[in-house]
Length: 143
Image 1 (cartoon, rainbow, N blue to C red):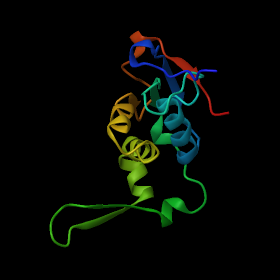
Image 2 (image 1 turned 90 degrees about the horizontal axis):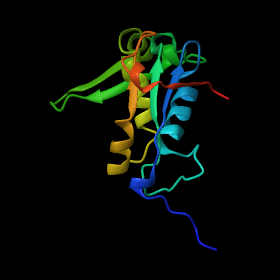
Image 3 (image 1 turned 90 degrees about the vertical axis):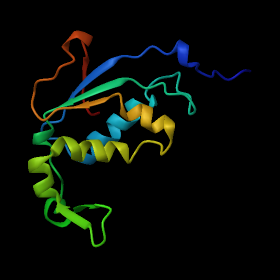
Image 4 (image 1 turned 135 degrees about the vertical axis):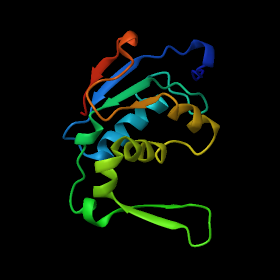
């Protein structure tokens, strides 16, 4: 019996829209990452980008469970000496909730050229409006 291996020219991509209002950040990120990888399709192949396009709206209404808003920090380095910076998640979610979701999803994707092509299929918006109406995205929910 032969195994099916997807070829890049045979992949049919779809568009999905996810309303993230009132949903936990980690659950949204893991669901979006699996769709971007293509793990929800029967034609999933680990070495080929078989995933679909995902639009996430209302990221300003994403919640963090427990005490994560007060205890969790986003840490980065500017590249200069003594340039370690930390931003608490309550401030990050208030100012750049779309960035927080993108970073969470990016951390769940492969750390290679395949992951870099997958993250380009993610579109994140703070409000309820998005620019991809012409693609007629299908609404999805967390199961």
